[in-house]
Image (cartoon, rainbow, N blue to C red; front, side):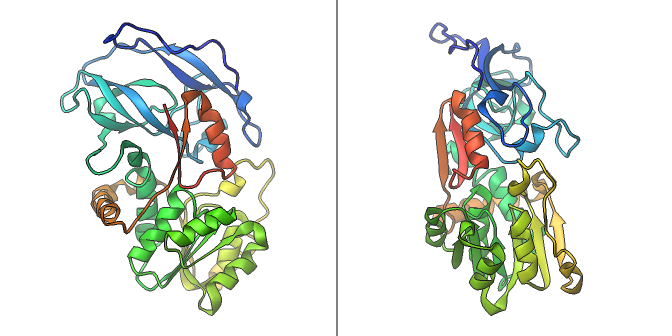
Length: 349
């Protein structure tokens, strides 16, 4: 990462900041991102206007979908601009407010991450109920990550009690929650894939019935062994590629697939090889549905109430991988794409 002079701003005690350190996109990655694609810089903060709050960010979220926004291509979300701050989920403390309903000291979630301070329209913030869980949880289990898992499994894949469920990337932030939600709702069997023996062990601790390390052999064979003769009814896809191909081969007639992510392809510079067996979806009468969490916000209240209860009674647990320092956010993102995290990847500011 290129790092022009960007010292932390010094100011008198009690004074509000007028500048912020931020991570900018210095160049567009080709394949796997490298530190040189990012820049640590200092930028002025706009003056606080009516209806706005000034937030000191506590944690920022780094997420796989951000890789796609680093490409200058048309997609469901606008690409990041070069030489400008990246953005994404963040939770922080209001340190100045000119908005009704937002007071100094409030914890709020917003979308101006990758920086230390942010001026945000109050209407673009949501409260973080730190009486229910630590602030960081509102970027994970109680935030968009949790809603992705909840709505993707129950609404998109139309999970029913008794279903056998396979989750790829199951030790990640979304996947680990999907498996636990499936168990809580009466799945007959929950299977997860992960990339290390330690992650496989963690999935079993979280209540998965079976888990495998996808480095141990062909995914199709590993999944067939884990599923047994009963097959699977639901596949929650975070990986794509060989995992999707394997799931198609093992899904039962009438099976459903929630297409959430395809992390195996995000850094690819050539066309993906598969799945090569998509035609089996015809005879098996499968349903494959892609979804974005932004299209599931109508379930937010239901999700928040249920997830808070699950966390309170221990039905659902969550992991976090926390990296300290804004300057380390680019490496945290690169490590995320390499699978270095267990649970939610966060940067503590």
